[in-house]
Length: 64
Image 1 (cartoon, rainbow, N blue to C red):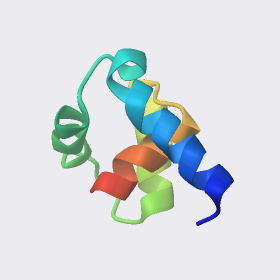
Image 2: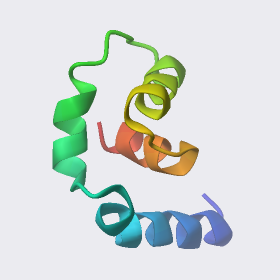
Image 3: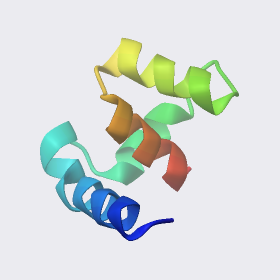
Image 4: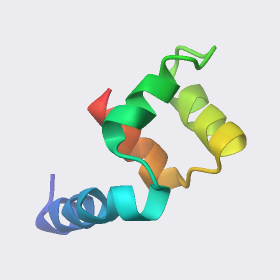
Protein backbone atom coordinates (compact mmCIF):
# COMPACT_ATOMS: atom_id res chain seq x y z
CA UNK A 1 0.00 0.00 0.00
CA UNK A 2 1.38 3.40 -0.92
CA UNK A 3 1.68 6.28 1.54
CA UNK A 4 -1.12 8.08 -0.29
CA UNK A 5 -3.39 5.03 0.07
CA UNK A 6 -2.51 4.73 3.76
CA UNK A 7 -3.44 8.39 4.35
CA UNK A 8 -6.70 8.00 2.43
CA UNK A 9 -7.61 4.86 4.36
CA UNK A 10 -6.82 6.56 7.68
CA UNK A 11 -9.10 9.47 6.74
CA UNK A 12 -11.97 7.14 5.80
CA UNK A 13 -11.49 5.24 9.05
CA UNK A 14 -11.34 8.38 11.21
CA UNK A 15 -14.52 9.86 9.76
CA UNK A 16 -16.45 6.65 9.17
CA UNK A 17 -18.96 6.72 12.03
CA UNK A 18 -19.69 10.44 11.68
CA UNK A 19 -20.32 10.08 7.95
CA UNK A 20 -22.34 6.85 8.01
CA UNK A 21 -24.18 7.32 11.30
CA UNK A 22 -23.16 3.91 12.63
CA UNK A 23 -19.98 2.30 13.95
CA UNK A 24 -18.30 -0.28 11.75
CA UNK A 25 -19.40 -3.11 14.08
CA UNK A 26 -23.03 -2.27 13.34
CA UNK A 27 -22.35 -2.22 9.61
CA UNK A 28 -20.72 -5.65 9.89
CA UNK A 29 -23.93 -6.96 11.44
CA UNK A 30 -25.93 -5.39 8.61
CA UNK A 31 -23.58 -7.00 6.08
CA UNK A 32 -24.47 -10.44 7.47
CA UNK A 33 -27.97 -9.96 6.03
CA UNK A 34 -26.57 -9.46 2.53
CA UNK A 35 -27.68 -12.25 0.18
CA UNK A 36 -24.49 -11.84 -1.88
CA UNK A 37 -21.18 -13.59 -1.15
CA UNK A 38 -18.83 -11.83 -3.58
CA UNK A 39 -17.28 -8.59 -2.25
CA UNK A 40 -18.15 -6.54 -5.34
CA UNK A 41 -21.77 -7.58 -5.16
CA UNK A 42 -21.81 -6.98 -1.41
CA UNK A 43 -20.54 -3.44 -2.00
CA UNK A 44 -23.25 -2.90 -4.61
CA UNK A 45 -25.85 -4.20 -2.14
CA UNK A 46 -24.61 -1.85 0.61
CA UNK A 47 -24.85 1.09 -1.78
CA UNK A 48 -28.29 0.13 -3.12
CA UNK A 49 -29.94 -0.92 0.14
CA UNK A 50 -28.27 1.42 2.62
CA UNK A 51 -26.95 4.38 0.62
CA UNK A 52 -23.32 3.68 1.51
CA UNK A 53 -20.74 5.26 -0.78
CA UNK A 54 -18.06 3.31 -2.59
CA UNK A 55 -15.29 4.20 -0.13
CA UNK A 56 -17.33 3.37 2.93
CA UNK A 57 -18.49 0.10 1.40
CA UNK A 58 -14.86 -0.80 0.71
CA UNK A 59 -13.96 0.00 4.31
CA UNK A 60 -16.79 -2.16 5.67
CA UNK A 61 -15.74 -5.04 3.45
CA UNK A 62 -12.10 -4.66 4.46
CA UNK A 63 -13.17 -5.01 8.11
CA UNK A 64 -15.33 -8.07 7.42
